[in-house]
Every structure is written in C-alpha cells, then in structure tokens.
Length: 475
Image (cartoon, rainbow, N blue to C red; front, side, top):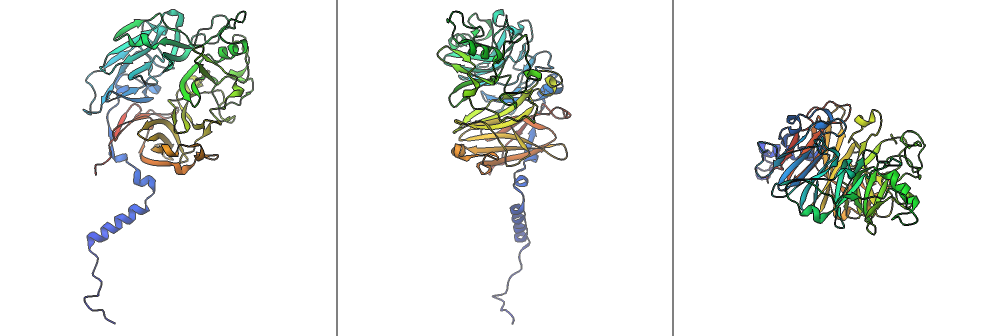
C-alpha cells in the first residue's frame, strides 16, 4: 500500500540528525569523560620554580584564600635552604604582583591558617638570625606582616601548626630535644591572644610564651598531672597537627601511625635509654585540658583510633592529619607522611598516605572514593558542601585529578560503610582533569577553582609548583 503524501515520513534534516547523534554520544559517555575539564584549565605560572625551589620544595603543599587572594605554600623542611618569598595571586585582577609581597625567614611553608580573621604562617623550619626562636608570622587584611618570636627558653625547631583556643594562640611542633630525660624542651607553646592582637607590624620578641605541656613528674603531689600522665606527655612531646574532634581540641604526635596499639619494639618503637620510660600504647594524640590550660596525653585505651591499624604498611612512618575538618557528624582527614630516620626522612616527607573518616563514637575508617584508585589529598568547606581533592594514578604515569563533593545532610553516621568508609552514593563528582603531575592543594573563590601541582617521591618533578585555574563555562 502506498501512503498519501500527507502521511508519508519526511527525511530527517542534517542538523536534527547531528543533534540527536551528539545527544546520544553524550548520554553514553562515562561520567569521567563528561566531567573532564582538562582543556579549560589555565596555567598561571610557577612561582616556586621562579623563587629558586628545586626537588621536593616545588610542591604546592597548600593554597589558602585570604583577602581575595590565593596564597601558595611550598618549600621543604628536610632539604630546604634560604628564605620564602610570599606570592599571592589576586583573584579580582587575575594577576600576580610584580614582586613578592614579603620574604619570610623560613625554609618551608607547609600550610597557612586563617585564625580570628588573620592569616598565619607557622614557622615550620625557621631560618635567618632569629632561628629556632621564630614561632609564626601573621598577615592582617591591610597587608601588614608581623613576625612573633620567643626568647631562647622556647627554642622549638619547628612549629608545624597553629590554632586559637580559650584565649590562647597555641603552636605545636618539636624542639631539638623533645624527649630528653633531663633537659626536655616543650614541643608546644602558647601565647595570650591579647598579646598577639596588640602588636601590628614588624618583628617582636614576646616574653609571654609558655610551655603548653607539662614534662616533669609532679613533686610532692603538687604537679598539674600525675606521674603516669607526665610520662605519657614526655613521650608524646613531638607534634605535627592540631585539630578539633567531636569532644575537644587535639594534637597529633609522632606516634600516630598504621602501627597496632601495642607495636613490636623495633625501629622507632624499640626502647631507648635517652628517652623517658615508655608507657605503651604510645600516645598518638594529646588533648587540650582547659582546666590546667595544657596538653595532656590521655590513657590511649580511652580513645578510639584515628587511623585503622595497618601493619602491612610502613608502621615506622608518622601520619599527619593535614588540615582535617569536622563536617556534619563526621571528621574527615587527609593524612600525609613524615619519616624520622634513614631514607624515609627525605622520601616520606609530606607524601600522600591515607584518607579517613571518623564518627563521634567509633574509630576512624579508611575512605574509598567512587574512583577506587583516587586518594583524598585535601579537603575544604564551601557553602553547604565538603569538597575533597583526590589523585588517581593512571597507566601512562599521569594522574586523573578529581574534585568530589559531599552535602552536609549526607555527612552522617548512618552513611558510614564498612567497605568504603562512607557509602559511595554520598559522593558527587564535581569536575576532573588530567595532568602529568598530581594536585597537592586546591582552593575556591566564588565559582573559580585553583589547583597547586606537586609530585610524589620517585616521580620526575615535571610541572610541580604550577598554579592552575578553572572557571566553569557561563550559561
């Protein structure tokens, strides 16, 4: 039967066929292909390389947004030399300054902290004439930089992290003699916040620094802590990170690791006559005691582990929670490594190690992301979401770099998962791109993303030190 002209199908137009073909292709693409934004990233240059950094020091460890600018952290406490130029990228003008904003006498900037409306730089590895007395630098919103240092009584070699709590500015790190039996120096110092706020600009020695952890056993029952707590304090007196858990303020120690609670007495865990008698299990964290305004190493048996015991990994490494956050009902912590002896001192420095989630009542769990090869590197809060930067090594030696989002209402204990840490459906992939280098850090201003590139031990530096910018396409 022949159809009438009015009912016969008309040939499909070329434009319509092309539209349907493209729509079908988009629908059948993998999520990874649809979200890959490699072609839309802008290379903003490599200020660490321009500043003379080489090797490990090229890693952009941290990006911090302050005063509408993106500040870069780079350098190395294990191989660094010289001073650190401060390069802030101006988001509004989309440009770098003609010269560094300032130059700090530090061999590395491992992280920035925005505290009480100001930008702080912990003295992770002081250089220059002031040396180990240096504690931190502060930048105010008007661009003024202030350097705070102590007298020689508190010559901590490194201040790895800072926080403000109960009217104190507290720094954690280590001295040159953290566990010395007779002359132990505090690895943590505190300074009244009022004193910090009263000073604006220049370099200042303040006599008000004090030790923030009791290291001597009590005499005649008059000490602030009992003898057993004092011994735990003395072996815990080497710090890397400060953070809030659900029930208070904590600092991690050199003993936070994959080791079991009662590790074999080998390597760093073997008895040492120069150190105080050990009180196993080793204190992986200390907790701030507001009554005595000091850190106290509690009985580890009273605490849940932050990191799953993983004896098949290198249990001699120290794990450092890197700018972890409490979000919703959960604590999220990217972990970086630190080696205290042998080749690990250089090879393990600030390397990506693990990513964990912890509820208020229970131990930390290892997180597997939707791309099972991706390891969480850094986290940040923006609006009602937690964003996770993750790197997935590819067969060609490069990386697929992914930003995942977690909505606050999904950050609940009911979404914890024995296999993946958190149920995979809770994560939402925001964007991804590919690069020969991994991304160490990220930041966001409005809808614009910034990524700082680095490299892992054993890989070529490549483009490490580069700052990348991504702006989503306008509608």
